Length: 361
Image (cartoon, rainbow, N blue to C red; front, side, top):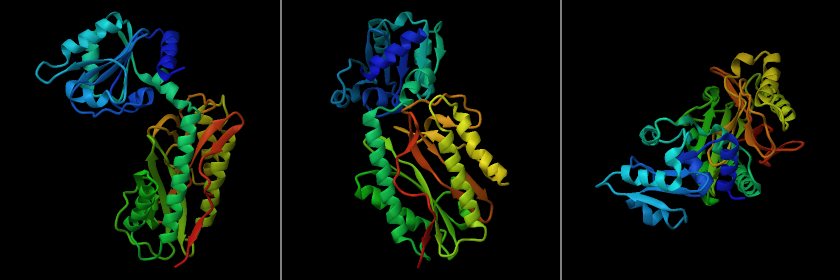
């Protein structure tokens, strides 16, 4: 069954007449097409009997190389209204009573759809395309596994190069170079040395690595349209006072979350398990973010592993487990692995241990 056929099955179950997607991750997952996105309205509309694009004329020839779906094209001289009306008429969407809009599309694109169907009930993609994207198939797993191993290699390259006197930016350069050598596109490279590690989303900069610094390293790259994401810790020589105790607490929180993650469990149970370990150790106030996020075409996507999430975890879902403790002015510790949920629990995609890496020299 194709992904469009799977979407139509969900649309029938939920009595959805029309799904409208803009350029972005939902469209890429559904069709493999990644068209240029600008202010010109570009939409894919799906009904039970038709799927076609509202396509700016200057995009048509390039897009045709990647899809056989029909185009309803329009030029800058006439605007999109007539072409969109034609698309709705041909697809049967003109009579839609229930529509799903891509929540990531431009507001003016959404207004174009709603203006043409003012009486239709509207929802976003959470229970249709978004829900389908959460469970990865065998091909997606293979790509995500390959990406995870690429991140392992980039992390090892950084560890091999690190030494006192380098800057955070120098270490990030090594990560970027490793991803590129492997044919991956570098996406992010958070390197937080010493007190900077207490900022979960530290902006990597010119801070110099000093003896005794704990260094948070959160990296990711992309190949074949999917991403990697991993966080590991290193210390420059002797670890700071209290560091090893806190590292052990975070590791135990990871293990508790792994044990809690099972098909049929609500996502908040996984967050609860990690948070309980850290809170019981007296560091609850220093665990300042969610336990995890889904990952696939996007680095952050559903399911989100939060204290409030009621999402029921299912086999095939891919998400991070990444508890952390951040002590202002001292250091931060985050340990992150991406997992795919199997029938008996999570399979970790990385093959790089979470043990503390001590850098000598």
